[in-house]
Amino acid sequence: MIDLKTLDELSRKLVGHLPPALDNLRQDMEQQFRAVLQASFDRMDLVTREEFDVQKAVLARTREKLEALEKQLAELES
Image (cartoon, rainbow, N blue to C red):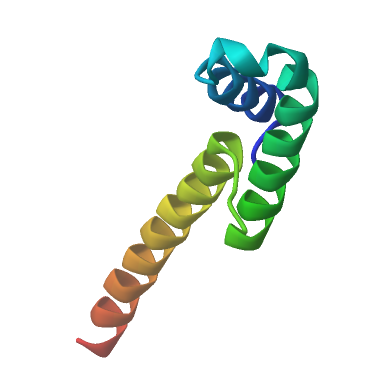
């Protein structure tokens, strides 16, 4: 899940590109952009960098254990 700070930042950037004639709609548009971004990111089922890094570390440890077990099995077979 993407954090709320990033969503707010993206919304502000999008609103920043609106023409000056729409200044009176800026706040409403920012809320709409944020809602659309949130819904889109939720559908993508994204994970945070922290969650990704944790899973990467778990996978590395699992791979090391698997390699050690394969080596041990090879020694037992010979």
